[in-house]
Length: 401
Ligand SMILES: [Zn+2]
Image (cartoon, rainbow, N blue to C red; front, top):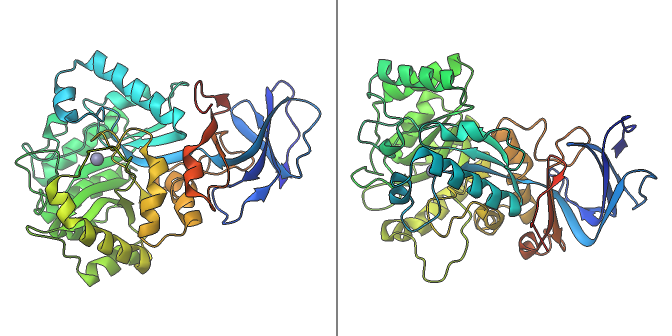
């Protein structure tokens, strides 16, 4: 527990609650007092005694957690039944407004940091730094083949080493935080094949090499076994989905599971589904779900770093605050509830490159704080009973009751 001396002119807010989950520990701290100066956490102590200055906010019966972090969202998709068609109908100005609304919905649901892994025309970059939105880490349009997965987002590249190197350089010049590359086809793009790699292995390697040369991490959308194997060989930092999708099922080779774990490649598990009456996953996904859960569990047991990337926006069951629902599925993969909470706070913040200032309630970290009713380790549903959300020290309007 550390408390620094408050600054001269800072606006001081003091939060008092029943418990605190700090983002890294498995234990809750009782009767926490969190001091916030402007946008930063100044000090954390226990015992319930508030300092004599500052505005005290009492949250009896509540647990304070770090604001949640979702490592895979699409602000440009509106979580409707056909988000691709709905995006196609909108001009950029309208899309920006819808993206801002999506970000505000995320904030109200306790999500204070998001990594957007696929927008249209780099629009998410223009939303970074807005005080009314979560902190945004942005990939711009994902790099894909001319008719490949999500080609309509505008990130197409010729499937040659020079083609992808040029695409990576363009993304870097536009100022993206991370490179997202579509190593296989995907469900949202009819005509693309989830069971096949989109790029030759040497082309994927060139893309990763160019990104790393420019100081950018790479995460690859990869369903097909060949796409996963090629992405691992190419040296990606992260893999999204990682379903080991074959033409008629799921087949996860043991050597590849081990390689992902050994190389410490981050597995972005696509988890976090909001129950919507009547909504069912696409039949091809539903049929493979038991196999996907089993292979993802093997990845976790082998020691692969794992976070929750909800793919928020792509369907009605995936609204932009879906990550609160991820722990339920992470626990099916073998994580304890405390590990699941770490995966959607400190773990995810590290994957977003923000481990030094997000995902923890500790002095010096950004004052991104979620207050929920009850104990979210003993009672996972507590995460859905939001009392208050603070984003960089500012209370989020109409979050909680
Ligand atoms: Zn996605």
